[in-house]
Length: 264
Ligand SMILES: [Zn+2]
Image (cartoon, rainbow, N blue to C red; front, side):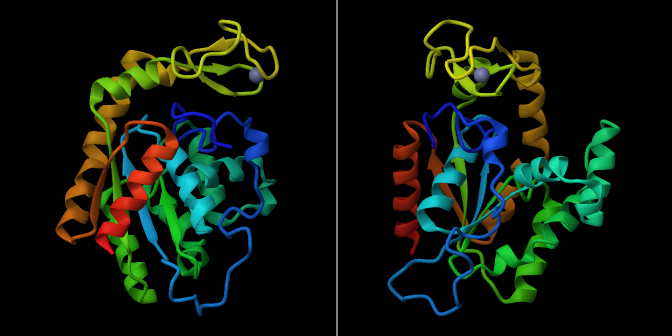
């Protein structure tokens, strides 16, 4: 359930503890991969979502995924899934990624790309797909372009969620996370019933290192340098659709669908 608009990409389905996010059918629509013949009156969208940390992109990815019944491919989900699997169940790319993470290193582009390529099926999904958290760099975007060209599957659009920096900082810096169940709150947008205490499990709420103002500045800087060039990349291909990420998740979702329909 998407409970509020303060949820951010590292908790893509809202105030649900990570264990409950552990859907086994990640990259499949709930009804399974449909035959390629789709009713012609149903729009099939193949989407990439872009947006700075804190714009609520993960929440939108989840709504789009549910309501369009599309395949959802989130690199965040991939990493979370991998971390819970036995090593013997992990693909070679997953094992390599886990090894980098254990050493506290960034997972290199090529490894992330391998992880995505292992999921090529989700790109072939006949009810469309939503890519969230990928591509993050120009190199990854170019790899994806080649893969899709090879599959003769075109992207429908790249949605860029926009929000002023001050609003992003307010969202992220007000976040509080439960140390026990990892539920996410916001001091003004989605406060717990008792300040500093989790509604769900009575655990203590804390501010994650990532959500401190100095960390937010670093995250925004990383985003600007690596991901923002993707905006130009997709704009040049005529794929970019900008959506202002203010309002409730449902309002942002409605803006997204309206923008996509206007394009189609
Ligand atoms: Zn809790």
